[in-house]
Image 1 (cartoon, rainbow, N blue to C red):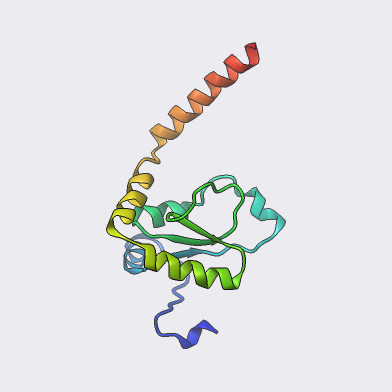
Image 2: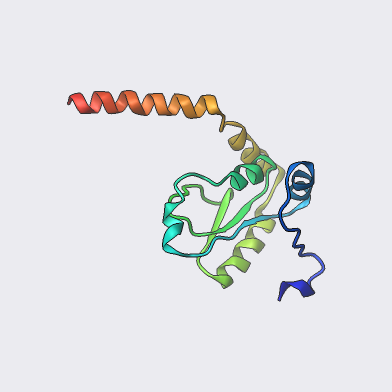
Length: 131
């Protein structure tokens, strides 16, 4: 179906500079997952989301219940028609300021921040257990 469009590319598996260059040149990045019961097993943002956000790109994805990011970072779609609508909206709404916000959000996701959050949650849990 999409092979007839010259502006849609299917590159297969990529890593490193090739992948980074491709993402930088994209207007939107997609993260299609099959809508199955296993979609609820995704509890953390997939690595590709972090790469896309670090490059300042909007993400078009199916609905993943555990992903709490909303537009203009992640545009979650209910069906094929909604997918097309969200791609158009992501391209239309995109600005340099929003791209910078996406990149900054991704930069804030360091191991140090994750460890601090975990330690705070564990301390809170200990306090909560004492009550």
